[in-house]
Image 1 (tube, chains in turn brown, red):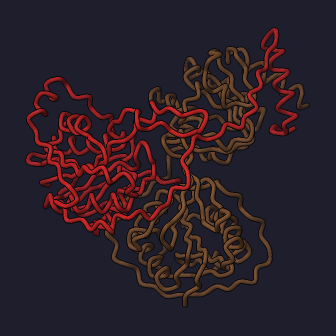
Image 2 (cartoon, chains in turn cyan, blue):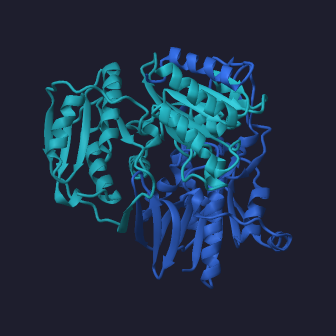
Image 3 (tube, chains in turn green, purple):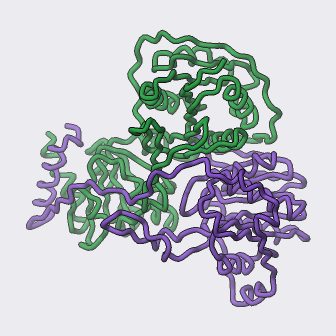
Length: 321
Length: 262
């Protein structure tokens, strides 16, 4: 039953699954192995077939009403048994709030290592799988590899591109599985009380920091964001201390990768910078010439954001016409 | 509810970390240490449960390759009753699985418990794996990333924020819970609390005391490198007579970069 060097991907999040298949395909090709996806759920046969178009050579499908909803022990039991039976060499797991503990527990049952939250992942010249993750509060990037197999990696959302669908020639393998006894009970689920827009999806982000004098002034950012079809974000103090926003951009908040990130009145502490590492172009607007944000910006403006932002909005409107 | 065990890490204070600009190596040896902040939230939560429920004991467990007295004294001042520490310099290279094994052996040696509380992640390595690993090794139900916690009879109820929903999860005790920083605002111990804490006990154990099989602690991960990220930004200053002129130049540059849509 062993597939020797198989690369597997699993996530309960459908989008993240596709993103991981793209990266998984690249890694499998470099390692000379097959790529398989694991789908667990209820009435998910269509989803399994769909994955063959996104690069999977095989899809292991566990389709049963008992798996209709994510349940840690049930999903863990399925994954563990599959890994023990088929012995993949590499397992990528989506680093969601449910997926990451799942990966940690799977790695523990298997007595192997886990490299979490890899923003980059590749195969080095020695043929080793190397994961890159931000560590020490954004002060460092750690490159890590494995001494044991299977090698378990977790992958955050939006780290990798979703591949283009193609005609697939792979096969879906249906499997039966029993659900391991649940140890916890979900007593209530409510939708998250935030806006529907996800800042990770934004192509342009206009973000503010402590330089913003009062909450109402965010209208300046909103207006600029509107011209750029972007979203408004903030740094941690505005969410955590002042409570003007519910979420923030940074290592402990959202890690973003827009085409354009405009940091207004943000000093640029290392944790914030770690969250915008993958932005294509960074603009910094700050009164303080010495602000560290200028060191990590492509374009820097020393000036008052209350003057620059409206002027920038007008200039863009004019030039984009 | 009799005993809560809080896993507490002494972490590198990343806000004070320096980097050697020539080699991009981190200078961690001289950087101050502090209680990992998520773990501080876990401890605060444990102390709050204790304050609401008479007869609860809060103990902390720490695995460290360095002296950690100051951090443990702080934990005791915040309200922990006793601190257990496994201190051996050889633990420097232990990975998350090894750390979890040592924590688990320590917890087993302490004896009975109802709740194990951990921070969701640590301040320095930020892996977020150890809590779930401990829970798995102890075969405990686990509720992770909890931002609101209550103890209801023989169960614990945690509210956790997922990507698109908020879930309320119930687990029978004994259980393991990992907490986020939103859960509370940790107290700053008063002088009185600090004085009182000086009489509390810190128990130091070695791996030999725990009977940990050293082979189990062999790292499963190889560190290829840990370096400060390279900054590959252009660092172009845009200047001008007034805001309008600056904005004009900036807008032009952004359009040229192709990062704004026409």
